[in-house]
Amino acid sequence: MPLSIDFKAGDKIIINGAVIENLGSNSKISVHNQAAILRGKEVLSAEDSTTPASRIYFALQCAYIFPQNRGDYIESYANLLAEYLEACPSAKSIADGIQAAVDQGQLYKALKTTQDLIIHEAEILSNLQQELDEAAHEDVPNEL
Image 1 (cartoon, helix red, strand yellow):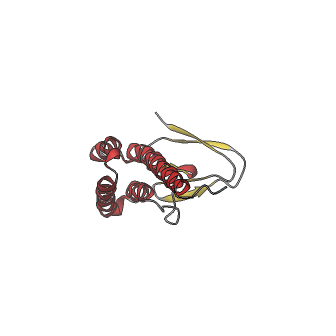
Image 2 (tube, rainbow, N blue to C red):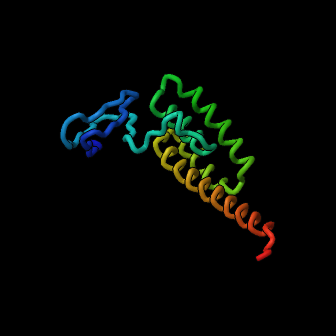
Image 3 (cartoon, rainbow, N blue to C red):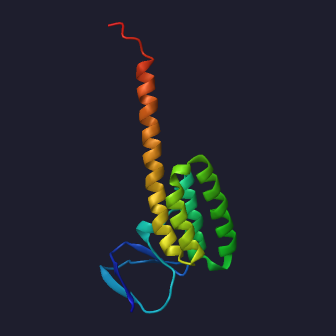
């Protein structure tokens, strides 16, 4: 069954490593064979991969769209994930899901699951920031 993609004007997609941009009006494309496809909104640039979870996503993204270097990117992903779990063991169940998809060769599914890791990371960082803010307010004397 072919994959249908709504391709809006100005959107970009990556198909098997080639960046394709729609310069015309909205259109719909159909991909009839196996291909590594990422829509523009799913693509993370190296410059934007600034957190540990986003670097994991970037390594998997590269493994997915550049199969000729997949082994190197999977090795990088594995190292990054191990470091992440060492710092944030509460993400183990998400990491297990990512690893299961990688083990099955389902890199697109692994990318989608890594989005959950990015959300988890944002929640952890938000909670930490809240705790820091509360601690800072506790240290301020009430002299009014």
